[in-house]
Image 1 (tube, helix red, strand yellow):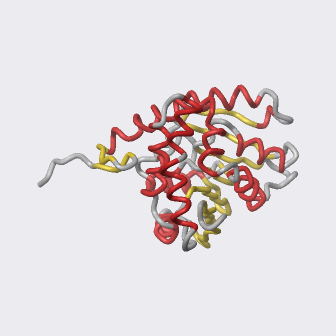
Image 2: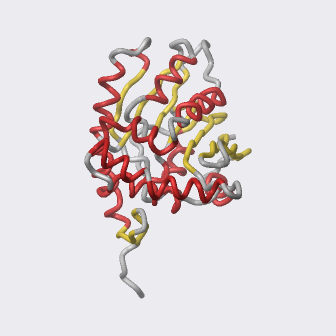
Length: 254
């Protein structure tokens, strides 16, 4: 019987499963203060439109007889949470959770200037082992974070656990361009321009190189949909954005 440690990928590298989270944390610790700029570089600024579309699809209610709670996982800087709270006109309560304390620091500071700052709370947590009770949220969102989780299936199982019956998961993630011609252009942009731009902005190209590589290692849409189904979600679907540069996945806990 083999005692070899479980492995996964960190960009193009093969690393021990237990080492990946620390390596990812190091990447985001170095770019926390410029994370939204990082997504601007990765998407040409279009990530803002995709995030607006994600929240529009979520359609948070603007009132009701009980609190409507959202867990925004890997949401440290708070940009998704702010959108959700504003869309609900201050009704939704969003728990912003991230494993990286530096990202949460940025989000908590930004939240002080939001229109409804009291509707957000910030909790450091691991997506694979959430410190929340069963059936405690109405929705679970994660934008551009799931591919950085070492054990993606375990995180999806946890998302299902903490959602109430009738709750919904929304996952926004970079995907695999499927438009002939455009795919080669996007690959050239990713390989040749994003790491140098990262070096120019932050002084370090390595985090951006990792992020480019991590996109290519992420499961393709059919496979990721099957992972959502394996976690117990029903009516799973995905919507491609901008030639499938990104995709929005959704499912229900029924």
